[in-house]
Amino acid sequence: MEQKIADCAKLRAEKNLSIAFVESATAGWLCSEFALTEQSGQVLEGGITCYNADLKKSLLGVPHELIEKYTPESQEVTDELARRLGKLIPADIFVAVTGLTTPGGSETAEKPVGTMFVSALIKGHLFAKRYELKGKCEEIIKQTIIHVAALVVSHV
Image (tube, rainbow, N blue to C red):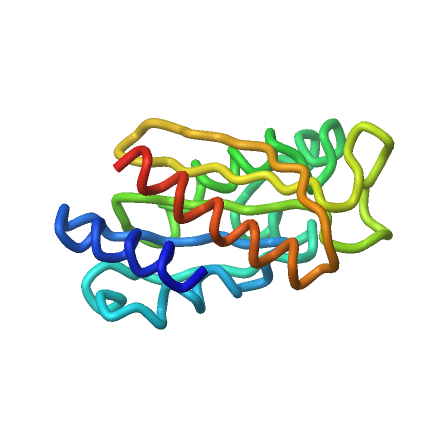
């Protein structure tokens, strides 16, 4: 995991691209991992953890209707988080993550625990991915972090 993140941070530093995160299911772990890289001071702007759906609305301005229609853990809400993050943190890349790491959220047969949504707004272009991961909460988060690094690298 560390190597994927280090490679992503190095590439962003080489291209002089800053990054910011808005996290729900990963609860700040993603931003923390990027903070541990050698290039963090050059590329990391910061992050916001909005685990509770009310913070998605009050802090980032995600419309209540969008959350009600699609659930807080959905691609549509994740996309909106990525789009709105720039109003709070200036950066070149905005990454948003929501999903289900444990039971008790909006899981269904079509969206089981382990479903994670990632949206990366890179230079005005939105790249979104849905992952269905297996394992315990920690394993799902670690896999998600690796996927985020790969997604950013593939579009930078």
